[in-house]
Length: 263
Ligand code: PEP
Ligand code: MN
Image 1 (cartoon, rainbow, N blue to C red):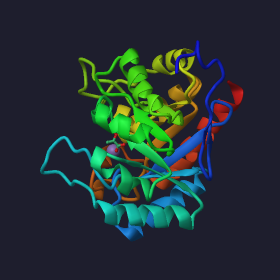
Image 2 (cartoon, protein in one colour):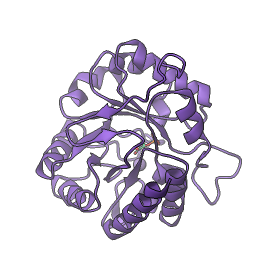
Image 3 (tube, rainbow, N blue to C red):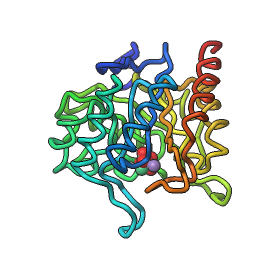
Image 4 (cartoon, rainbow, N blue to C red):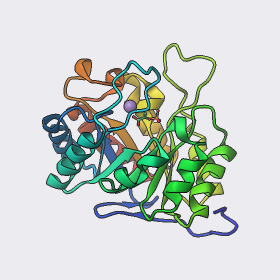
């Protein structure tokens, strides 16, 4: 999949989105699917801000086994229904090889989470499908590590891959959750044909930092942003501190499009 073999950019296409560097794709939604009613509200907010993809976790890779683990298949159903109601695509995480068929029945894009970036059997399994894959950079993964992970997917025949920079672990995570590696965006674009997106939510960890990191990502040449939203962040089942309110998302989406239009 290297640039030498694929000089032309790969465009990832879904029913409602075309993910490439010519346009700016917005994916938004809650960290976790919490209820049918809530995910519908979030889908409406995502659509209003110009998103074409609804995100939401039904199988959650939580650091602690005692944290909310997701609604499972019930969550996938709610997510699909909400996306369909607002003409949006779905992106949701598949955590385990044994769930690829199940999640594939509901989603338009598989998310491979940072913690699973080198789960090679999972990468091979999604590589056997024809469903686009959004591959998030592991929190301690090098550029070559994520490129090799993408290669595991592509080797199975599936080249509909999106790479995501979501912040890496560094020595100081007191004031930021992770460190957004802005430089990874142009580097990954130069080395691979895949669209490169930025997830400022998991990089920042705090709502006040999401906007600046999102705009930096767009300025660095990201093909899109994936952003967590919630109407009541203090009540969110997961990742509340980094959730934007719907009106904050709208404002950030407008600013992001303005920057994208001048680069
Ligand atoms: C998520 O998208 O909710 C998530 C868990 O992301 P990451 O794998 O990047 O931590
Ligand atoms: Mn999250």
